[in-house]
Image (cartoon, rainbow, N blue to C red):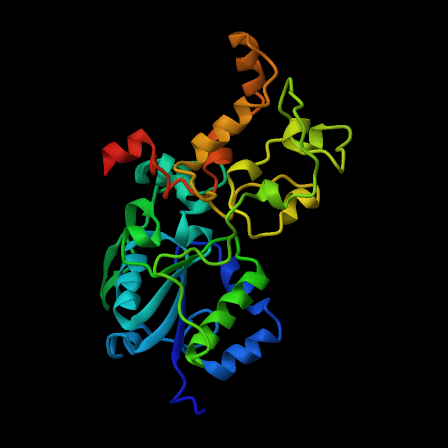
Length: 331
């Protein structure tokens, strides 16, 4: 099969850290099978690619696009709309595209507050108070840079999405499984799953994949792992007073973190049936607190140093909240 005959593939890195790009390369020899079946036409991090090349393509000319990262600026929005138009299948790839990811925690602050922190705090030397400008006139012409959007949005809050592959980043075996499905479809050996399907996740929670034992133990306080003298390698981390997001998080990662002694932080997104991730976690925490006294309960909850960052670390933009009050009012 020649490069001209092979279906076209694209991948784009929007507002995210780029870990999803690396995760694709972590499928090892499977990348050779991928290359044999696809013609990569747009992947800026891996090849010389220009937006004008994509703009010149026919609508639907790209078979599959993996879009990682959310929509934070005007460029992200433009490319999301462009790739939606040119792609038959658009996949929200990774936590940031699916749920918002860690960058979406910026939705708790307004754009002005973000600029104030970035350009006027102790870590930045900026005596002239210069801020980025979307346009700046120079003798040679006007220079433009992408303008920051008022809020960070998930991919499906901007364009129509066909499939979702969560994870921060998605597990390599899950990426390989998705590629196998697409290749099987191309070869006429399988059919695509229903539109809107979340690929690479199970129908249960991380807790169901975790090897740790769960009982009915109640706790009198929350601590970070490094604050504990000893972590029992067999007992549920939540029952040891360590905030673990396994009860609200979709399975599919083989519970790698809690099985290795690190708490689940929720990167695979809400489990099936979970309407709001943070609310589900609040319920899970309430079930292990050993007190009926309001003052004592408040003291126990004070051990949760960063509730917003803990309960909505990966999915604030995709949650019922989406933004903080100040950001919403400033939109």
